[in-house]
Image (tube, rainbow over all chains, first blue to last red; front, side):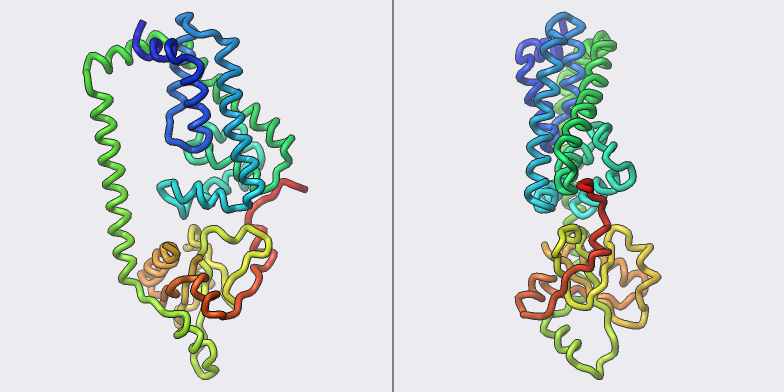
Length: 270
Length: 53
């Protein structure tokens, strides 16, 4: 028996539950791999379907329910936090919200398969005040589909998984190399982001006092103040600078026509 | 970090020929200076769907 199946057989249900729970609350853990391995372990007789399925589903549902409740009671604060951890915070919330916008609540049925959207879907449902019964029913189906899809694939292709696992062991540190390359790529990406922010330093800036003077000066030419916050627009009672206009930062091109070329535009976020 | 988005947008607008500036400190600084704010209008809030109806 190969090592993937051995690992699952040894640490078994706990590792399966842990992997699914951690992935569901947002850790970058490939739970699909754990599911594939569990499917293979079931095929090899090292695990029991009647235990593995409820363990996996329960672990994931607990995580989802926690995020849903947190989203429901924190408004958009939790989402902002989750998005701050992600690689691209600005796009994060809107991207996942767009799924809901386009496909409605059925998003929950397939959200698990889409990285990024998977973690965001339960807290988004909470923030959007989806009823808990509705959420639970849809999420149970979504989790079942996810768990069964990967579990079945692992079950059907367990022979191939064994071969892959054996191959990795034969070529020694292939996995380690892959991890090293991924880590380097990530560092490179952060550095690249850093240089982009340094370029942002060249942008012209204005102090609030200066801007206030300008607003008070009746003789000064007209100006535009634009709100470019990517989140903070979804809570009832949210505030903005008086007289400012909304400029959606993630959909800038469509907003350009409404902007004057001859008046200065002052931008602010949080 | 409160100027990350506005700086990015300002750069893009400048590239397209607009006369764009970043307000230092953003909304936080604006409030701190005691300058006027207003509620975000309802129709802007309805950007996202809600499921509680």
